Length: 82
Image 1 (cartoon, rainbow, N blue to C red):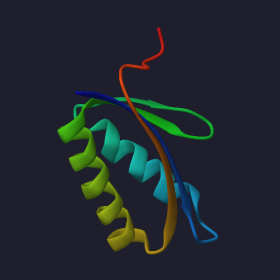
Image 2: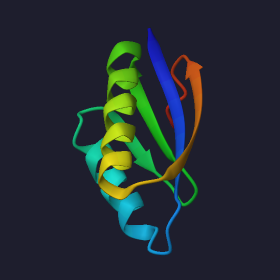
Image 3: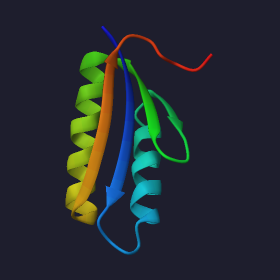
């Protein structure tokens, strides 16, 4: 099953830009298709792989940078930009 995810991260700290850039870089290194935008990052791939990457990446973010709010919209299907 193919997933399309729109993920936003809101670090709860004054210096919020670096945690976001590091999160995007980490997502881009997973091999999944990742498109970063001004307000969110879109992630596309196989259900099991996407969910594994989301879990591992959010855990890494919490352990590395502390409190953050994540907002994810998850849809079954291929919604990649054409």
